[in-house]
Every structure is written in C-alpha cells, then in structure tokens.
Length: 234
Image (cartoon, rainbow, N blue to C red; front, side):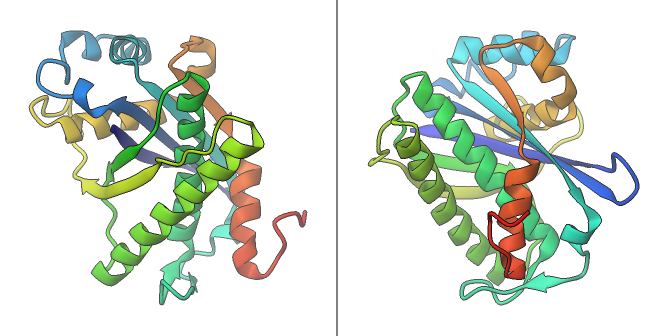
C-alpha cells in the first residue's frame, strides 16, 4: 500500500502563456509515520537535496512535470461537460489532465524500480470545488489514472498492474511554513509543494529518486479532445 502526495504550482512564463508545474511522490504507507515524518534533515538547505536524502531513506520516488500552455487552451470562465460532470471549469480540466499524467508516470517510475503497486491513497492540496463536482472529479481521476497507468505499463512491457486500485483521494490543507510534523498528510503535501517550487533544479540535482519531464504536448493534446479535436491533431 502506498501514499501518493500531489501538489501544483502555477506560473506565467510569458504573455499569453500559463505554466502548470505538478509534482507527486510516493512512499509505502508503513514507512511514512511516526519517526519518519519530518526530522531536522528534511528542512536543511539546499532543500531539494534534503528531500532527495529523505526519499532515499524511505525508498520513495518522486516525479514532477511542467506544461506551458497557451491562454487559448485555458479559456478562464468556460466550462466543459461530460456524463459524469455537469460542468467542469476548463482550468480544472487542465489540472486533472496534468494530474493523470504525473500520477501515471510516477507509477511507471515505481515499476521500473521493481516496486509492487497495489492499493494507493492519494492526498493532494485542497481544491475549492462544489461537492457534487468534487465527487465526480475524484471518480473520473481515479478511473483515468488507473487506465492510463495500465496502458503505459503494457506499452513498455512493465507488467499489467492487475492489483492497482486507488482507494482514496483526499484533500489536505496545505501549510505555508515548515509544516506540522505530527501530521503525515500535511507533511506529505508540503514535500510535493517544495518539489513544484524547485522544479527548475531537479534535472541538475541528478537524484535517482526524483525525475522531471516536460508534459506540455501530452496535456495540450489530451485537453484539446474536449474541443472535438483528435489527440493527434497539431
């Protein structure tokens, strides 16, 4: 059983563009609790190096993705509809597609290191969605992550992930300071937040436990399908 902790950061790299940076990290649930959460070494600078050391001690893994997208794709104020979601803001759709990519890639990273993946509990920074939409959004995310991860794994001959299931998707109130080290869920999201904020340093760190990737094309192509365009349309 694993905990997955997820957070995102939004930036404006240039006029007419938005950047979403999303990070997730995974740890076996038996390893993340009293005695392992926090600790003085986690807060030492450089922070990203401290997080790397913590992940090494926990045998954990992290992945961060960045997508730079045109404002035309976001279209603030516009909503999209599905059978499950009466109205989802386009900004929430972009968030969801980014989350699917990051979580699916993290699962693949665990498989590549011969980790068995079964039951997963996802904890993420709280999003202000209406209750009905929040439940539908969780249901959609749960199904898309499992489906995408299984497809990615088969394409790369990494196994079939027959035991993979997402049991919970729970919001966590993010803290701005060093975090309450007595709350393993807040601390988990705190680490994800710092991975987002230090995204530009991940590649040069060369930490085996932390990887990063540009996910712009994948998120753009997936989102544009809601406009009736093919995933493969340029």
